Amino acid sequence: MRIIVIEDEKSLSDAICEGLRDNYFAVDQAFDGREGLSKIEVEEAYDILILDIMLPKIDGVTLLKNIREKGYKMPVLMLTAKSGIDDKVESFSLGADDYLTKPFDFRELLARVRALLRREKEDKKALIEIYDLAIDTNKNIVKRGGKVIQLTKKEYQIVVYLTMNRGRVVTKVELENHLWDESASLWSDTLRSHIKNLRKKIDNSFEKKLIKTIPGIGYEINAD
Image (cartoon, rainbow, N blue to C red; front, side, top):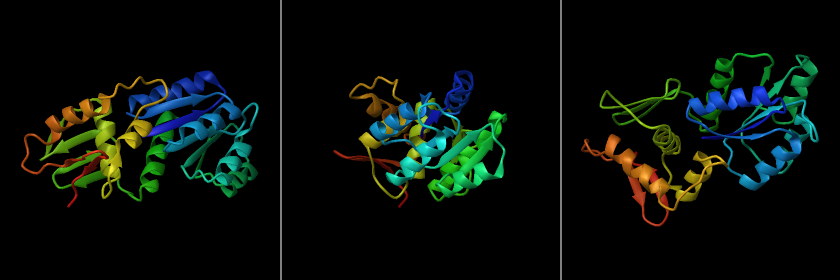
């Protein structure tokens, strides 16, 4: 999953981004509202937006109103040093999905991010299960047949994205857009290489194969 953090306090932004990356998210940063809006419009691939209210150039509330009017529907978690009820009411009325007052513990932010992503995918449980594959999205643990499977961060991101989008084919372009941040350098066979390694770990030793290649299109999880 790919997240954009729009926060002008660099030390806080860096800490949030580092924590999210440690928990297997692809993360982009912006340090003012104008830069953030530009990235949202260019990338069009963010699964969640973490947005500070007090931003230079374009404030967070105005940016939120702008993206909702343009039709962007990704969940938005607002951050603010303000604790007044009026700020919360205004943010929610403009389309915010959650609200966190500074200072906060990163663990709370992470829990809220995960909850918003599950809600967006209409999956309320932290445990994703397909046949004998089980993914604990709170602990970032993957098991198949009851055995823990050791995955790289990118392999984990891929299998989570596919399972959260089970029932449909996920294109190669969509996977690349949602799982690699703007700083990543992708070769033509980068995704295919990760899929190959992922198959070795969660499919090759099992009769039931879960990762399906749809030639010329992308991949899907075999949930039939």
